[in-house]
Every structure is written in structure tokens, then in C-alpha cells.
Length: 292
Length: 277
Image (cartoon, rainbow over all chains, first blue to last red; front, side):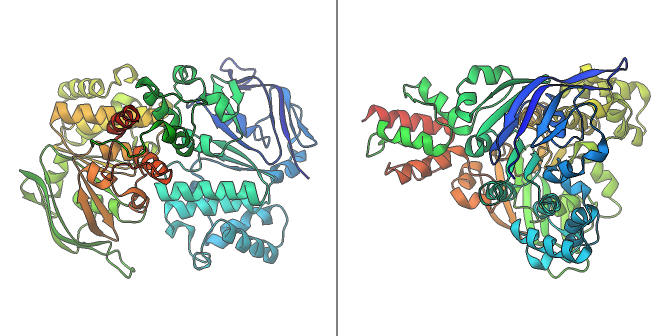
């Protein structure tokens, strides 16, 4: 069944009730549709990671409530009721390869389902299928995960979360530290999971080009508040506001701003190189320019 | 003068079938900024480890500032080379930022007064003086890497090696580090060797060396390398936006220039084309 997620007046305090209490989330209201792709952006320390840890109740609201499908999470929710939720919402943390620990790739991927009660044979079979889905070659499955490249280790870690067969996949900067090939592979995998497996994707990222290319909805966090939400086009239409929050623009939009300063005009502002080229081509001389 | 000379270097890891570094030779001139690029697993970091003598080569010579690297000279050579690694959290030892910057000097028996002066100077150079008494753990990624840089420059190396020092940082942290390196290179006349996937970092280099399967497969200035278009992805670099846009325009039957244009020159070219319409 499709799962939608809502936050209603969610506040979260670290070390609540002590003199060291710090408010990390302030009155958050939002909705995430089943099967959608939501990007969460914001500076380091703006509350992005605190926000996503509420999606499977690793953190519970100090006040307000989070609804994931039928399940309501508030400050009174007991941990023993959370198992179904933890299976439904899988979180891939930053540098997830640091959490690999098993002797072989296949055992590492099969660990999660066994932890949720699946027998070993069935878990191993499932792990093999998931490994194929994330593009890990069968020859790697009996190798130690620590012998793999950074990009491959990242895929093993993502496979470990996918083996729980979640409906919602949350990823905290899944491409950080990878080379461009590895980044492309991971983003292609994430979009494949959304389009073919119909997973709901929630992605924390600093890559505005990824936001422009893939997201349906953008949540902008600033100082623990949901400072803005909207489509990528809505969010990136206000470059002054983004700059004042120390957030960037997609490369194509940034380039279009430079072109406007020398007399080009765009409506709407392009978000990708294809959108930019579509609007640019009719404004250019067919033969190109003579110099250069 | 060549401050780094590498001649016919070979290295093979135990229990592997092929050489990680395969008959590599190159020179780096004093004061140059050279970027070494290559996809993950292309053994860029192996090369860095050989250069500072963390591992010793099977054959070939490494000559740093006129001195051949041997098991006897390695300590003297390391005095000349500072290195910043990928993960800022793996390189802290001090309880405060100042302690951490002082650590390298403590190893070299620098006296206390000199040490304090150099810590202050190094922190000033990376624009982190205000954080002197903070705990390193509470800094942002970019700030941590700047503290790591301060620790390196406090011992006054001639050569700075950055091993993907930018890759774990957010865009703002990346920008901070790049600007700091540019300034330090000029102020301290450093030779910089950056091992990187970051196109902005590579763009700052005088020369880019492309490594694949333990060999150098290409060498050029940034515009020479960036003109490779889509192949850059396999070299471990991203395609510059100006090249992506040129390709998108070419698909729409715009006659675009064949040579590499950076963003500034592409804006100029597009403007001329618009005015000629």
C-alpha cells in the first residue's frame, strides 16, 4: 500500500528538559506524496538530518506529530511499536560504507532481513536479487565488502537498506565523496528505484543540479525551520533569496543569470542544460559567430 | 627547477595480478600547481603514498628537492612535504584547534615561543584565528580542513599534497578550501600537487596529469583536458558546464566552437552570435 508522510507542527529539542536544550526543528508542517521525489536542501547544521531521522522515528517529535501511512509518531510513541515503520522507511546515512561489517558482500546485504526474522536461505536469495538491482556484479558477492571501491561499497550499503524492501527510501548525501562516475551511477540507481520500483525518495543533497534534474518537491531547511517548500522551479526562481541563505543555483540557472546580464532573456528561468539550450538556440545566429 | 622528479616508478601490491604504478615518470617544477586526476581505483593515492615514503616503490627513483628518497632520507624529505587527506575527521589529534596545529611542530622539537607564534600565524593564514581554542570536533568540514592545512603550513613545507581534500565537503567548504590554497600557494611559494575529482580544483592547476591503471595516459593544461567532453567522466572528472551546454546547443543545430571554452569565453561567444543574428 502506498505510504504518504505528513508532519504536523513538529518541534524537536535535543537534550530536551535540560539547561543544554537546543531546538533543532521548529514548527515543521509538510507532506510527502507516495512515489514522489523530495529533495531536502539547506546549509550544514540547518536541521536536514534531524528532519529525516523523524521519518522512521529514530527521533520522535518533542511536540507535534509525524504520520507515516497509518502510523502516528509523537513523543509518547513506544519503541516496541516501531518495527513495521523501520521496515517501511529505510534510511541510508552519510558515508554508509562505514557501517559495513560482514565477511562478504552477500552476508552484509542479507543481515537486515534476517534481523527482521527472515530465514537465512530466503534472505540470501533476496540479497542476491537486490545486489543485481543496484548493479553489483555477481562475482563481487563473495568478496569482502572492504576490498571494493568506494562506489561499490556505497552500493552494498544501499542494497542492505533495500533488502528490507522499504516503501520509502531516505538518502543523506548518497553521492558525497564519490567520483563523477560513481555519482552518476548512484543517482541513476535512485531514479530507477523511484520509477521502476515506485519507491518514495527523500534525498538530502548539496547538488543543486541533482535537485533540478530529479526532484518533484524541494524542502529548504534554515535554522531548524522549513524556510521554503515548492517545486524546483519555484525554489530556484528566487536567486537572491537562495544566495542570502548561502545556497546555490543549478549550473544552467547560474549560467542563464550571467547571460541575462549581457542581454539575453529567459522565461521561465532554465533549470537544466536542455532547458537552457531550448531557449538559447532561437536567440542565436544560425551560423554561429565568426570569432573564437 | 624540478622540485619533484619521478623516474620509472613501479609498485605492485602483494597478492595482486597487476602493477598499481606502472613505469611512471614525471617532473613538477617548483611553484607549479599540478592536479592528478583519474577514476576511483586508478591508484592516484598509491602514487601519493610513494611520494611521501609511506610505502616504498619496487623500482624507480623519487627525487624531492634534489634529494633522492631512500629509507635514510625519508624523514628529511617529509619535512619538505605537507599532506592533507580526504577525511577531516581522521586527522585530528589535539583537544583544541591550537593544540592540533602545534602537533607537527611538537614532533620536531620546536621551542614553545616559536611554536605559539607559528600556530597564531598559521591560523591567521587559513582565516581560523577566531577558533583557536575550540574543539576540532565542533567545526564544519571546511573549517576542519582549514585547520588541517594550518597544521601542515606551520612546519613550513615546500610541497603541499592534497589527497581528495575537497571531496567530503559541502560546496561552501570546497570554496573555502580552494580560496585558501590559492592564497597560501602565492604567499608561501608552495608547490601544490592535488589529487582530485573536483573540476574546480583541477581548473586551478597549471597542468593536469591523467592516471589510469597505474599509468599516465594524458597530460595537458586544464583547457586541453577539459576539451575531452564526455570522456572526462571516465577520467574521474566531471564535464564542465560550458562543454555540456555546447553539446546541448550542437544537438539543436547551433554551430558551436570545437575548442574548449570556459564559462566566461562562452558567454562572450554567445553574445556575439546573438548580435550577429
